[in-house]
Image 1: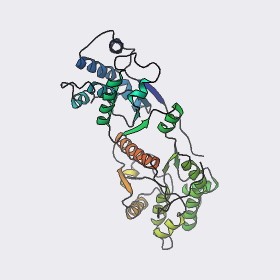
Image 2: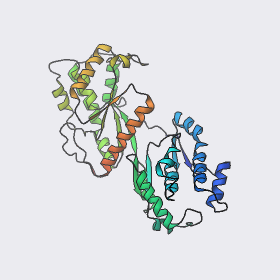
Image 3: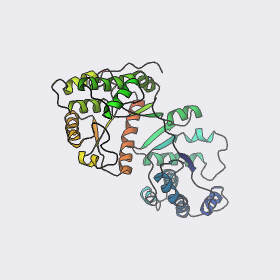
Image 4: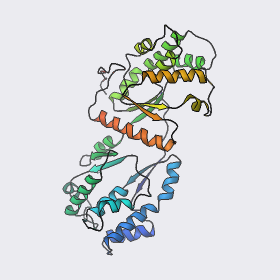
Amino acid sequence: MPELTAIDARMWRFPDRSTSIGQAINAYLAEETHMDDAVIHMLFVANRLEKRQEMLRLLAGGTTLVVDRYSYSGVAYSAAKGLPHLPLEYLRSLEVLLPAADLVLHMAMSPEATAARGGYGQERYEKVEFQAKVMEAFEALRDERWSVIDAAGSIEGIHAKARIPVQRWCFPDRTTLTGQFIDKYLKSTFAADDAAVHLMFAANRFEKRPEMLRLLAGGTTLVVDRYSYSGVAYSAAKGLPHLTADYCRAVEAGLPGPDLLLYMDIQPEAAAARGGYGGERYEKLDFQKQVSREYARMRDPGWTRLDAGEPVEQLHAEVLTKALEAVERAAGGARLGRLWDLEPVQLPDP
């Protein structure tokens, strides 16, 4: 089974009414006080900025923040007032010191449906006519990071749409019978015929094929490190006449192809300079250069190349953007194809 890692996550909601600024906002929303529209917008922004340092500290430590009513909401509500001195661009400009969201889930619902829910109408902005203008402002703000979810359904249905089940796999899977053989081989415990080794790596992936198809059929996203492309590149890099790239590819033909292929490109010299390099059979600079050349030969327009020398934060943002696009395509009905020829894969019933 793949190793599953717990995710440290926290749920925040703005405005944070526990602070002095938040208390002033609370009094305004309860219509206990009145303020100039520009002033109240600045208070909402300041309320988010109060949490900026804690936000950055938590994100740097790997915590996932799930934030209800972030800057996008603040901009939309102020823009909905239609005041000439509060244009959309000005409102957005006040938020630039805050970190952007990796993903925006817009729970879309008609103002009338919202008003029909319990507790509506107790605060200043809870008016059907005004909420219609807020919806228009959200439409103007929407970009490629947004995922729109119909919030008119049941809580269970909304949760199912918003939650993206994900598992991370890494090949070879060293827990299986073939994986134990591969592990010993990579640690140079014994020598083996190169064709036999290639078949063992392929068999290691085929061992996981039924589970892979079952999870994909059930809607799980699989993030796979070192899939068939890696196996082909490493075997072909040996330069043996009976281990051509075409033969190596043919062995993998029954496996499902990826919806997205991210190639982390790095110079072999830079990879060798990283910690932990050199502990296994293939971690030799000259061989890695040949592997890099094989990857270059294999690359086609379907690959997304990323510079693995970039800062981790930048790589993370690029990977997340591409991954969410692929998930959206799959959710929209994109068919899963086989490796190499992209013929449709028959998935089991979930």
